[in-house]
Image (cartoon, rainbow, N blue to C red; front, side):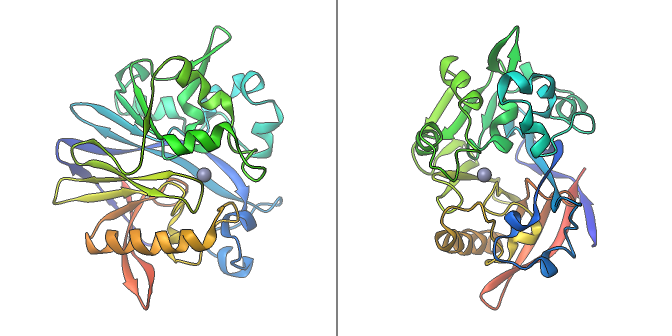
Length: 295
Ligand SMILES: [Zn+2]
């Protein structure tokens, strides 16, 4: 696989990857109806059929420091017993050591106090988990000076999860943000600050927000779980977790079409091999044109 290193700046913001640690998910669940003989070539599975997954946030470093998604919270794994139960880390192969949210920010010269804005694509644990930590036995926002942005409808389903999503939404990942009055609820597509806006999708879960970052010259789309890895650029390559696959195909078609038209980079949260890719439209579907790592 040919991967090109690049540096990206959009407006005054430097774009930096924030790997928060790898974890493992069942390969079959990650690729839905796609047969293993097709996905295992690019995503080899372990003896428990789990494939490697990154939980990669994106830092926009500039006048304000903006973080998109927070990963599983592997930094606080010793506190997992208190937060989500001890079995949790084992099932998802969440391990301490390696990269972590706080270590990745430190590498960019930032401490938790320096983060001004956290944008959460949605409240599933592998996206929101790192946003809440435990201090003196109390769950509290990891970033004490930040406002956290999420869609209002996504919070509503997180508070009353259906049976399929019950294992992904945990009050411990959002109630402390509500209690600390730092959770800002957005209602539909919104411009959070000039050049940074959200695209809403309901196929993976209700009111997931992708993040569109542009200065008119360079554009990056943070895909979240709409396109979790570069393998998922193909329209029918969906996850078994997606709630409404046909709707998600429609949404992917619309948003990837828009991204291709803008010559945007897609940023992948879960791809363990690359950070970004440019795509092209091909026979009514999409294909990766070039993969990149952000340095
Ligand atoms: Zn999700």
